[in-house]
Image (cartoon, rainbow, N blue to C red; front, side, top):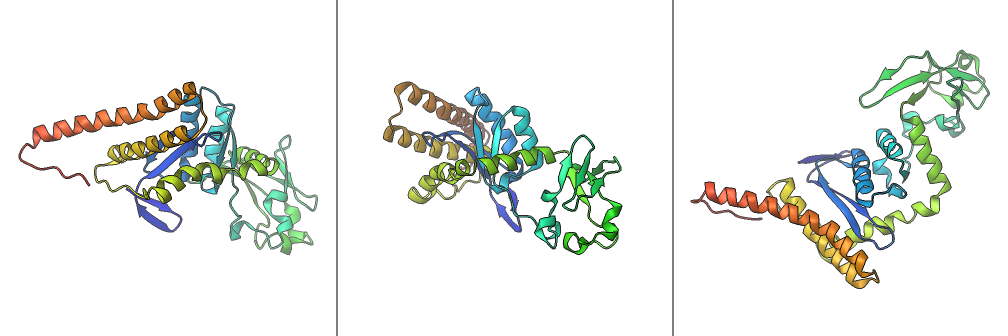
Length: 279
């Protein structure tokens, strides 16, 4: 399956994983046909179901920074710390002091106040983009503003602020990142530990399979199981926690193995004169 990452198109599946911070164990994984932009929400739902709790903080890199996914996280009652991508050139003001994040939103009036003290209002209409809706905020004061050249390069309407239905969720994440920067720094050490072991130490940097996503998921599940077993045997986790962790990982592998066995049986029954090659 083709997955687009920026300007690069890859023929592959993406492995999404959830890692326990305390023991660096994989508590969940899922192979998908999508990139990271739409992965956070469904992985958080699965994590909440597995842990039977939402009292945890989820750490992600900037590839997961999507407004609709923050909305899902907030609806689940889960705090996120997702790295904030750099502002694109088109969204930057000539002077950074006048970037949109420096305009103060007043929810009571549904209006923005600019750094010069002028108020930007919307016409109340919601506009549709590809994956979200938004309002536009502007002011006539922009026309005669003495710092207009520092604030915007737009010649016709002056400065326009867009606010989507997910802006509040995005700002909530930004505030948590600002307040919990030290916690976020742990992200790479957590999630990259399993991948570093599996890819660099063991050499599993890819899976050679032509049997579809279910088979690829089973292959990855066996690698994940091996990783968890190694972590458990090298750590000081108690017997009860060991049994629970093994069950969570092994349960998925058993289901995948049953599906593969069924598919193999059907294939050999229907094609008794053909050989089957596993790559």
